[in-house]
Length: 355
Image (cartoon, rainbow, N blue to C red):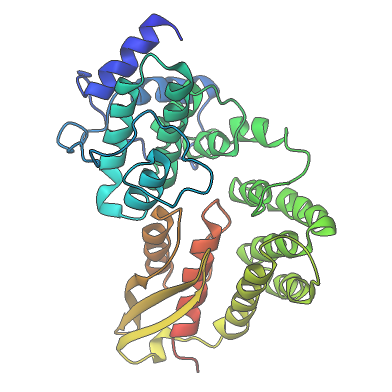
């Protein structure tokens, strides 16, 4: 690590960088050159967010800041293990997301003489900015500083910052999709090439029928090709083997299949004012949703209970999109957060009264 870079990290960790900047808004509709995107990442990424200085540093005094792995067979203890603290205490509590960033910068300071730990912390900062804050420039900055060059998260950031070409450069390196939840297929669809994503999903389905066909169904549904989506979802239900998520994927496919079948029966103008509830399957269990209808319009969507373990930021994003679209149709759920998003969308369809 160069000395200048180390000094920059230390300044950031201590919160004394002079310039502060808000995260750049997603601008996938306004194409930018590679040079423009890299300049944006360098400029924004090297400064703390505007809330950084006012955010408290809050972590258990018993935490092992060396980030040593827990002994084999040791019980889950977020008061000692850094990774478990981030997973349980930070990720699952939106009110502490900013504290998570502050904590990781503190970890850079504490471990400044341990290159391997510094690299791990940088990668975690990239993940946290990406998964929780949707701060694409800072996410890309820390991913780059961690030495990453061709990860799916970087491709997603580049696209969100305005360069589809940079995203494609990374995605084309993935000749096939071996990810657990077909993230390569889904990202191709999100950046505007659903045909490519669908082709990869069908190839994946040859070896992993549940995950591949589920992705193909989700992509087809996002394209408005509902008959095709129904066929793919049925293939998931018919699968006799596949991934370790077979049972869960079949529940998700059933939820999506049911939602498509009843979506056309919803007429908001005929829905009485009130609050309606339902749930659908997410990553680890049911996602409970409450939708409020007034004067023939969806005025509010809330996730009232869930057991999700990641991609929490997709909850607010998807709820806002449903209000904007006034229903589930046309709401994109093909990104990395697709499982949580899809559960919310399906629950909304189930909740609203039909004709």
